[in-house]
Length: 281
Picture 1 (cartoon, rainbow, N blue to C red):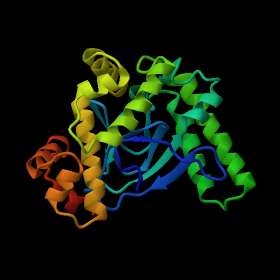
Picture 2 (tube, rainbow, N blue to C red; picture 1 turned 135 degrees about the vertical axis):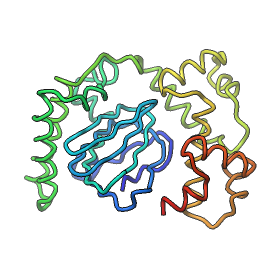
Picture 3 (cartoon, rainbow, N blue to C red; picture 1 turned 90 degrees about the horizontal axis):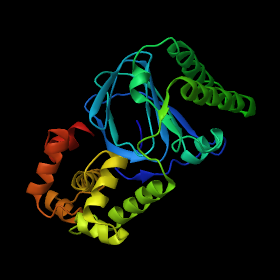
Picture 4 (cartoon, rainbow, N blue to C red; picture 1 turned 90 degrees about the vertical axis):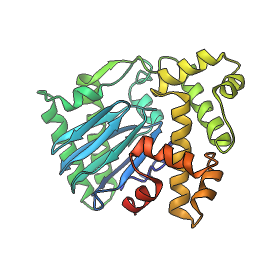
């Protein structure tokens, strides 16, 4: 399964042999939800078999066989498998993608997630490339195989840029990227304490209104919802790695009471923390 479990800015670590991360996953537990999260890399999900539900901002995509979706950097998303599947995941770190596109990606354009699930004449070339990557992954890892994978991934970038690009509107300036980086660090450092939009605004020396607009513009969510998601995923981490009580988890993650923890889980996943833990074992 995908290992990204927390809503934080994740720097995808490159493999020793390739400048990006690429892997397949098969869903066995159909109740398991990959919690809402974001990362700096562009993530491409290709459904080779079965189905995969992808929630991206305020939209939900149900991918079937040969469907794919591209998730741009800093976009909050989660996945769930409604049936057994076989999914190819390619994560392209921003520095790598920036280098491949002469620093135009993200600043000049991003990929259009909607167009990727709307059938077009360009889909077949992309699907064939995904299939080739999967085939190469089944071969013995060596220099030649890795060079072939690198070639195919660059071809994916070329096809997406040529046919599935749209003008960048979400993050337009380097200062906005820096804002997200610093915002993430600040929230992860202080989420256990009472935290308000005013605290964020003072940290950046911005007004409350301007800070709220920056968060909404770049991450597609409000500050309060963002903080809640951070705390929820920290709670998920504790419930999976410790035997702490729900009250202890509530206090350690900034919810303070179990009722607040319960309400937060129910508002996002429509289930209690106990139900979530049971379904995601």
